[in-house]
Image 1 (cartoon, protein in one colour):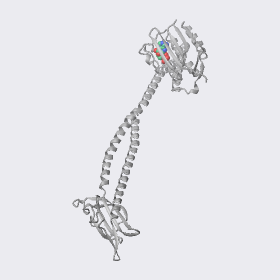
Image 2: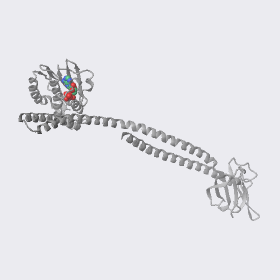
Image 3: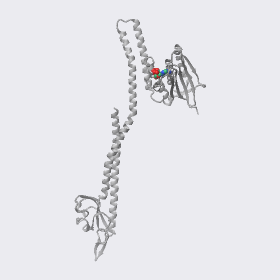
Length: 432
Ligand code: ADP
């Protein structure tokens, strides 16, 4: 599934980036073609203007004559122009051929005026009579005026090799460069796709692990309920035995209900709480019902509970029910993992930024190798890994509550000496 998604991501990345690249390369090429042709045409036009300036038209014994002797390329009295002209032709105002240089032209001008691109056989040209490959040339036909009077037409042409050679080089460069760039884009897409999939894969793995752990935890009590119920249904039924089975079923169902509510809790508050859910909370009010509840339990185990109140009444920025749940979980752990006659302390204090709640016990403590993992979901330290201890979700819930409210949690513990859990929660900002 992840491999397919990664492939899809890479493919879409390559297609989108590749199309941008191809469009860019085509635009670049077309611009280059246009610019080179424009500059070529301009040179051809400038040449034709220079040649037309050498034409002399005069009247001799009532007859109109045209003298081309001083026309560069066509005339014999001038130095040839340094151009790569393939031919030059002069036609009279009646469009009849008067003089030419290069391949033999038609005797009457039939081509339209202006620029034209033509393909001619090379044998027509002066450049190389041996080669007979077709040559592309750019031809310009211009009417030439003296005053308002049309005196003739000048037609010149030059090979487009000068334009085509660099364009050919550009085509080769793009032809190699674009596929290479596409390959690099595909590779980048693949690497980026892998990176993008990493957090998704991690959450997916965590979710799978969580679901597997939750199902595992639910399977054992369900099997217990089923077996008790099946035996209870068998004949003959001893009312005493049936009663004890029903009590077991109720106990197991209660523990399942606790597990389900813990799972729902973890699913319901996955991230930070919105600021509207947090309000200044008087810690004493949160603690009072808890202390009543736990004092009774603690006395049954002959443990003592000492509360160290803060020097001034402590107000925290928190969601009261969640805060109560977090402290209840810590007190419940302290009670369960501390032997009879042990001591549990609840220490409250504050710094300039934080309200601090510490739950300390002198119970069994936590081994150093377990410490980094006790806040993980379903983690239970090995030596107490039995059904009676709990599902390993209590501390995960405490951490989730504290972090959702912008706080921090820490633990210090020594095996055989006890543990101290410290919660830090933000103080409400002072008014004004
Ligand atoms: P559980 O419901 O199993 O107690 P928790 O998430 O509350 O799950 O605790 C995780 C593990 O951390 C417990 O299984 C226990 O090994 C250890 N632990 C938690 N609190 C204490 C404590 N006060 N003293 C010793 N061990 C503790």
